[in-house]
Amino acid sequence: MSILNICDYKDEKENNYYKELQKCFGSRTHIDSVVFEKDKNPAELLMKLMTERYDLIVGHGFGGVLALYIGRATNVKTILINPAYPASRYWSDDLADYEYQELIEKITERDICWDTKRETTKNVYMILGRDDDVTDTTTSNKYLRSKNCFYVDGGHWPSGADFSSVFKKLVLGDSFEDLDEDQIAEKRRDEATYELFKDFAIGKTDYSLLYLYSYEEDALNRMSKVARRLTGNEADKELIGKMQYISADQLGKDASNIREQYNGISFLVIDHITSLLMEKGEKKALWIACNEVLDNNGRILLVSDDSAEDLFEGEREITDLIYNGCVAEFEDNPISINKAYKGVIDIEVGRKPYSDQYQAITIDEVDSKDGNIAIKWHSKHLKDQILYVYFENGKWHIDEKDGWANKERAAVILEKASTEFVKTVEITDHDGKNFFGWGW
Image (cartoon, rainbow, N blue to C red):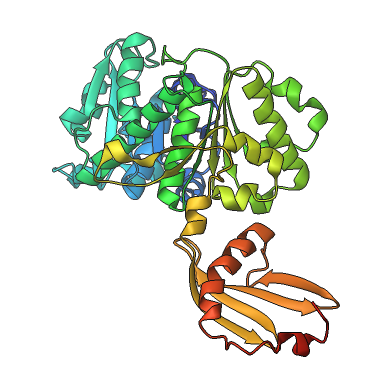
């Protein structure tokens, strides 16, 4: 999730509302925090910010003026906290010599006055301090839908339990009011995912390692977003212990100090695991980190761009961890929230977690050239694949169209292809020994 926080004139980047956002989403959530500056052209700042893609915009004071403009233009959910709006009422206080007054008024005020139905501010919410002695909250209130405005205890910089409660509800969307059906469904999927992760983190399920993967980008984004929120949610009293969220590229390659880093971790999330981007040293570090947490009775959640067959193939030490854990395939199902996952599959002894996908391999065609074999095949997630089996320089070789062949997958493909292959062969009358010329 990406968040934009625009601070008031003379405020700090990591202001109260930056810290409130961290409480809601965790310290690892990406938050762009900028300050409304007197000596900088706001048009340049707006152009820069509007080229970014944000999921949430928060603005306070004069920062709220810019946040309102960006929110209306991008239709991104926007929360204004005591905005200095309309700005033309407040120049004389601190910005009497501000050279961009006319520009601000032109781009933020003139057209909104004609929006009597408030259609361009459906996505904008406002939190107003009852005792604000800097801005006139009754005037600000006139420009938005009344049900989108919330009064809280406090002045121009509201804080405390009353503010935090309202802010959290708006940020996390605890109320589904004003959301369309798709947004409500997405919010429920987020919450269902969070509850599943939480049950795992607090030990309501009897396994200690859960490996989750998805071929659907939306589902993977949801898993990543909820995993960050889970480990950063200090407000959830059930989540006690030392929790940590990292992406796979943060593992490092120095195996010597890995154990020390993850000693005492009760819940570890390792996100964005992609085999093509992981070198051998990083895979070793992954195993050490996981093993250290499990040895200390902790729990591990692995979120991956790759299925287990692609990520752990040939890495027996890592695969052993998965054998002793559980594998689930995330299914983005907007209809049944309770079935957001196909299920958690207990790994039986000797059974590879990706054997189901192997069984789904379909042989399309088997062809040969000079005694060498080419096998066209596909599976649910891999289309138009070819396995080449050829003899050269006294050895058999395998290769695939994409160059990512491995022996285990080749064995399954050859086993399945043999059925198709024998359909085309001719049975001879014991002429094989004469063809090869040796006496087996």
